[in-house]
Image (cartoon, rainbow, N blue to C red; front, side):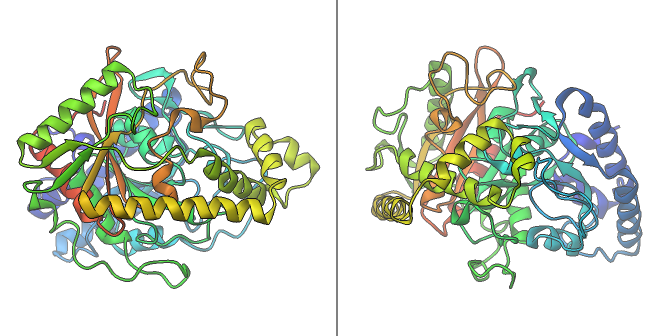
Length: 463
């Protein structure tokens, strides 16, 4: 019998349609997998078994009548515990959040999933307020890598990535303010997309402002397109949300890469030291895209590392999100978050606006770059997963997570769509990711290129 936990959302829907199996079977299998993996990888804040099975029974009856509610009726999905899920606390990885509040509202992306009939398996782990690129918090402890539990799953959407990689639902909602869907997806061997800013509405607004995106984390690019078609619609609660997409992302998948102008930047012009095994896996994927008909050349975008500007914006956001806390609540925070919040509180308005100037100039430079190139390819990360429970690899010389993520946060500053595709492993069997970036509003090109790699059988990952 088919192991339903290995199937994509698209394949589950096809099975429902043909009557091969139903949502109750699929959801029960995903819940059993979630319960099994939880003691070792710690991907969930809470698993909603009873509620999920009730939702699945409703979906199964609708499929029996030939009247599915929407595009994802009966498909299991998880929600990062940064996003509101009606009826359940959203604790954001923090002991400072009161679980006894009135949790009566869905985030926009969650609301669209509910309308489409998706089944909510549970809330997945995050570092406190999503502040760093690994997933551990004072509230939930350490989330571990599905390929090697002694290693980190990455972050801040680490629970979501581990859940998808291990079969606890084919779809997950994550958030990405500096790489937070791409980092854990690359470490765990799955696909993730940070869409163009505003494509997926966000409410409540992030304290990290317009750095923060909501994005799909999935088994492949086709599932991400399906999910983006559902969640990528306007919501009146987000004043910065984009208007309706120009068409279906799913329908645009089949365009292939033939004729696309592709820039491959292996190290951002020598600015990043990339491990040889990572560089080799990424180069093989780039060569495969060239074989599929893309015009590929090595070319580096015209910018230097904008980390100082990113830190100003990020640390100021951390100060803002913790500003309301009293002394004892502040003492309960992750020490790293407490440290960057204190730094952020010392920035002036002029410091902040100077960082915005850097951001705008970076956006201009990337806009010009994409006049010449449809896509930019880089490693997603220069390394593979390191020891769990650390913000940065031991002996790396980095204190903050941004030291080892130089390929991800620049594209939060510019608000461009960027995805990670699993393209191999290193000598320890740990996944390597290829990052695909396009100009703002060209999410379709990112998904097309990623889908071409999946269709060619090139990608690898999962566990």
